Length: 250
Ligand code: NAP
Image (cartoon, rainbow, N blue to C red):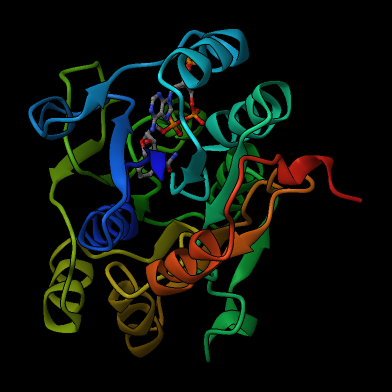
């Protein structure tokens, strides 16, 4: 099967290796937001919206699309769902479960989006560790005392009183504990990304009495089947033989 894998996550890298080992032809696509992504091979950059993706699917004779983008990459997921309807191509979402079942989830302040997270953080006060990535940071610019951890900083202006920490997971519990202590963090803001790679901060916060604000995931695209692991993904794809768009199923 010729598969377009929309990537940008650790799970997408594992899925690409598994699908290739099973004999599928995999084209991995990345948005190209970081130098690492741009240097990694595969295709890089947007398709040009739904119409551009339909064109790519048709001209490249793609049999199936695997949407393994980050749970917060909502635009790409919506575009993939819509394009697959138009191009009549299978689409499947690979999405690890969120942290709703985490042992400390009931202690956290759950909010709908970054604006609500910034508002809650301002109301609580204190020094904040933002672990929401680079793109949503402007929503938090009103906070005065912030450490923001990002995978790659690209030199944009930051408010006075802010510090940028460039780092990539996975993170250990020891390192997260040390970071919260060294930075004198009183409040942690996180997206409900799920998975193990960045979960240690949640245990460290619990241990140190640091409050957690958790941004809820955006809604996934309607009608797109979802699996939680690369192994489930492979099993699902191997159960499909001819191109058919699942978003058309009742
Ligand atoms: P987004 O807001 O959902 O997408 C915005 C636009 O970027 C899309 O419409 C598409 O442009 C392009 N795009 C996004 N993902 C792409 C991909 N895999 N291949 C080709 N084009 C892509 O996406 P985002 O939140 O900026 O995320 C960008 C990338 O970073 C994704 O690959 C995602 O998996 C990864 N990532 C995101 C987060 C996060 O929190 N959002 C965290 C970690 C990693 P066109 O409309 O021109 O096709």
